[in-house]
Amino acid sequence: MSNTFAAPAGSARATLETFHVLPSDARIKTETVCTLLACSRTTLWRRVKEGAFPAPMREASNVIRWRVGDVRKHLASDAA
Image (cartoon, rainbow, N blue to C red; front, side, top):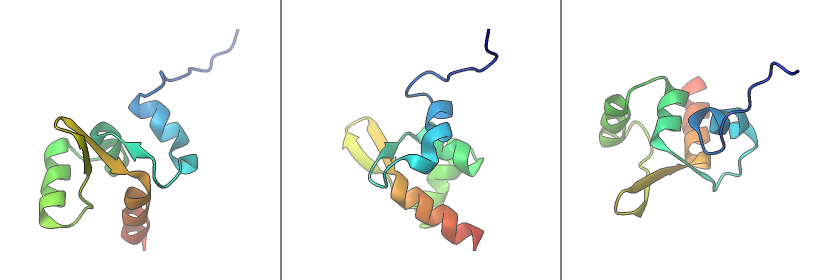
């Protein structure tokens, strides 16, 4: 019996586990971005409003996603 845990597909954990191999045009949920930045939704939206983080894409009236490439670029510039 294996002790490994497979995160449910589409979950923030599953996305984080594969973030490094996702294509740049893939889109991720707000929950995943908050986990990557270690911040709350409120902080994330404040950063977007201030121009300190890239704006998301609205895929539908209530569906918001960030492009993986935009998030990677921000993380790389933040680390420099």
